[in-house]
Image (cartoon, rainbow, N blue to C red):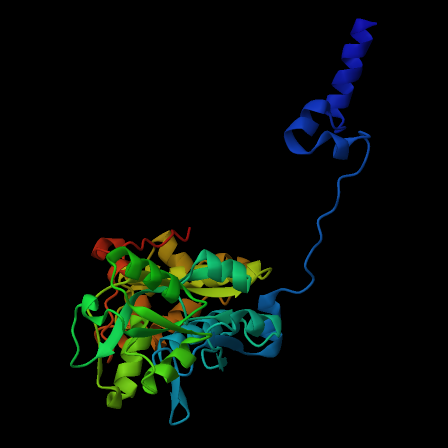
Length: 359
């Protein structure tokens, strides 16, 4: 009888029927019995976000168009960092960098922009945080750059925040800017008062109406405001309140688009790390390094697996350059902002960014 029992258990083990050991390791016991019950089937999403973009024939990129720092249109041509990144996405997905639609999304309205299907991806606007991800129901789709929170003050005023005790600062209330400065103000006991608004745009209007003396936001926003409105007679104080890593984000559930865009942005950084640019594309086009061949589409399956055009990076490098070229031209040393990359530099250049291998 004992021999029969052992043989019966052995048959069960090798016939694919669940055992108590398997149940313990994989699913709760109450879900596993009776042993012959079929496993639940996972639902499959019928339409991907990338397929939707392909059918529509354009990539819709959300950005803050109330200021020229991110994107702007001049002589019917779009310019700016967000514009170039949107062009990169369009080249990768559609094979045409001009098939873009830059959509104005004020701060605080990201969730609605996704909810009402106005955008495919949100670019610049605010630093990435747990609050942004949970409140707006978004997913991180790759690092765009590091910005920093600064303070805009009167041009002839003090550089020491302690000298503004009792004066008012305009801030977007439901933002990381407000929370970071609140902590900073309390830590150093500056005694600065607040006027809070539901968006950066409203806070900026209040500053222009002289309802407050100071304004705090990302450096890119403040430098853009100072440059576009010289009548403000203002300057950005050389005090970093916080680091503001800024990411492209997509809506919850669009994991195919999230994964694809992360690898697209990673490829731009890898191109910079390898030193691939417009001038030497011919040399790298014949390179035998397997990672370079993957990047440039000589081994097309890697990009096809992401539902992207295999040779999109070749076209982007030729038209726009690698990540460093795009950054310097729009935000860095070749731009009016001269925004330092700081932590956003590649690790080999003193930053914190190390691109993932594409192999």
